Length: 316
Ligand SMILES: NC(=O)C1=CN([C@@H]2O[C@H](COP(=O)(O)OP(=O)(O)OC[C@H]3O[C@@H](n4cnc5c(N)ncnc54)[C@H](OP(=O)(O)O)[C@@H]3O)[C@@H](O)[C@H]2O)C=CC1
Ligand SMILES: C[C@H]1O[C@H](OP(=O)(O)OP(=O)(O)OC[C@H]2O[C@@H](n3cnc4c(=O)[nH]c(N)nc43)[C@H](O)[C@@H]2O)[C@@H](O)[C@@H](O)C1=O
Image (cartoon, rainbow, N blue to C red; front, side, top):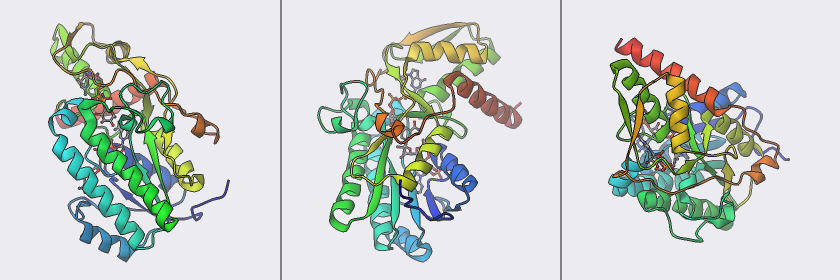
């Protein structure tokens, strides 16, 4: 496999403070690359002129586009305008700015939610645009699909070595634990921890617990992205996942056990379930020799310990 990245590359990680961006920055630094970062307060990536100027001035060897408006099922359901417009603006600004600055390599983070709601499982990359989307995150998914098509258009029209990947649901250090906007795994950790501390007899979770989700630790994602940056150069997006899923109910039991909460669980079915299942087919990535390393229960325990210790330092 040819190496599409210099041994010691200068790589702009857009979204470096986030769950994915911080893990990618850690991994690329460990691999000997120079990671360029720009705080959002200094550079709002929706501002195409400022973004183009930054990329022109720095001209990195590669860009990892991990900046986005991201949130769980309720955030996506209640703010579709922002999820559509912010993500379109960031993608238009960064991808066009990178090409105008002559940046040779760019990797766009997509998401498994771009696939049809009832796609055949496990979901292959070629099922994209073959059926209706999941309504709870349709706006976000359309923005992500636009990003994929933008990448494919730069490849076709200019021969740009730009690529896109589709990760499954992610978790890890630096995740979002705000209950209104977070994804399910950090929300469960926080709900069970706070219930254990307060002695609450019951924890109420959203939906029925029946949907199934696949979870990949963000350090495993970062190892996959480091590989793809070096060797992947095809039009089609590439899935990144661990190849196994579980029900939200089983996930809740696992998190309850890790946290040590002894109360009961109730389900608020007035809240949406979202797509019934979205297990990714990761055979193309596996054929490149990549495998995840972090087992789910151990990953959850490690994230819980780190979040608990950090949050108790702030407010014991
Ligand atoms: N989390 C998940 O389960 C999954 C995530 N992904 C994808 O991975 C990528 C990163 O997600 P994740 O790390 O979880 O998200 P986070 O919310 O943790 O991080 C997003 C980052 O983007 C930055 N950002 C947002 N808007 C702007 C802006 N206008 N200008 C500059 N920076 C901005 C944020 O900056 P600040 O911190 O300053 O607000 C933050 O650092 C996204 O493309 C997402 O779709 C894909 C599949 C699953
Ligand atoms: C990552 C990917 O996937 C996201 O979609 P999602 O996987 O459906 O998002 P989620 O993690 O928020 O929910 C997963 C399941 O879990 C249930 N659930 C129970 N109790 C809580 C709870 O307390 N919080 C949350 N968030 N969910 C809960 C919830 O009802 C649902 O059935 C996209 O938004 C989009 O961000 C995207 O790209």
